[in-house]
Length: 371
Image (cartoon, rainbow, N blue to C red; front, side, top):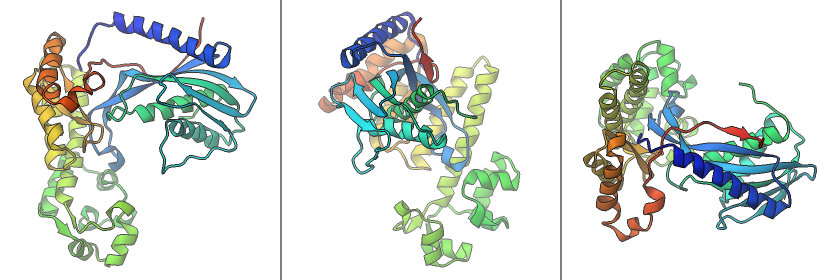
């Protein structure tokens, strides 16, 4: 990632704490008892494989959710936000209802609260809280997850708690018990290279029909719907098993290769990391098909503007790109991407300030107390 000078970030953080403290005092009449921070994150490599049982390689950002908090004995959660777009919200801790049909900013906070409350079977304290955020919303940088994590951390601190730490059928395994492609590799006890070879040997690149899947597994269409397909895939009529499996196993291998380069830091480390990011995007685009023309265009522009590697991140189907840019090329990179991608379109230009920015690795979730 591009690495801008650190001093202005530190000054800005100090000013931000002061402004948040002032907002809290203005709202509740006294200074906060503590502050909590949870960063946004960008996934450098490893897309759509974590829920298949494989590791990904994310990086915490400077951009974050920051909250000022005071625990209370009222059993009432009082939430406010420095951004006036997000309205104040108050609720008794025993009357929390999260309406998933109408997502509101406070629901993410309440999810974090309830997660800790249920984990500890907690009769929780109430709290007064003011939230501030610098993560661009809906950008694939986990602004909502950061708010959930921050709320969970706040709840623990406020209550003095600490958390404790088709291929299968072909290989003769009990496929019904395997939920993830990673489980399959574990059961077979083979390398990722062998899994890729297995996919190429067993599966054909042409899409599988529902009938063909049922024939291979020896099940009925009804069993396919009830035991395998999710609610979102009940009406799918063909399945690109080969492409999806190749992406998962090759992407998992790229994550390990990326980590090895970071650990060993060879002389051409940046080039190697950039190539892995580029390969990741190609696989996401062609094998997993989670890109879109705008993302592909933006990746191309980023590469032409001086990035050594660029790829979609944040799940895809929209979202954003992450690019690795040498520090000395940062200013020219930002200028070129701005001119070619954003200023060329009036709608994109309106989103420029919140859509194009440099960052460096940030710290993890943290609690702060004033000296």
